[in-house]
Figure 1: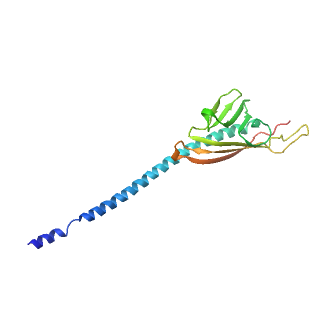
Figure 2: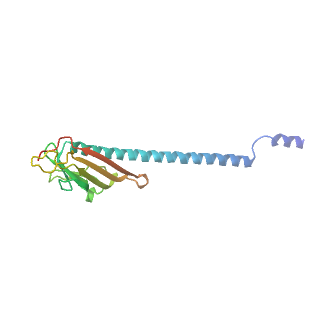
Figure 3: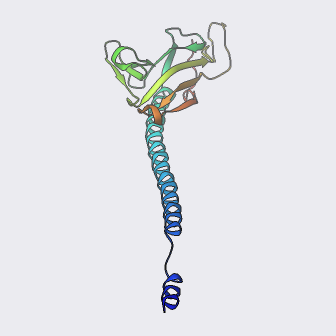
Length: 193
């Protein structure tokens, strides 16, 4: 009777070892899945942050480009001549006011700032999440196309290149380096001198 009783209970259920192995396998799978989910959420957060910042930079450069296209009297670093690597760019807008763009300093450090008129305040046109490390303007074709005095002409419309380098994002783990270049050609014909 003892043998029939022990044989009946030996065939059913799991041993302690089987339960421990199954539990540890389940915990391992859940841990890996949770880590992957957290990684995906972090990557999504970074992508949204970078997208927002890049939209801001694109908007700032588009605004600068639209104004400069219809502007006159381009100046790079205060000079009306061609400029290879200027740090400031100004022009006379269609309403008669002078716009100046440069890399800010002080409270506006690492931001592109805009100054309207000679006495206007410098206003940042990029968000605080954008850290602009380098801003260069290249201006060519500044000699007039038509000369009434027989002086220098270059037969080229004024053209400006903007090269912008920096970091997008405000959190150290979510920052992304970027380099953006755009070109602008003056819409109106060269002035006659």
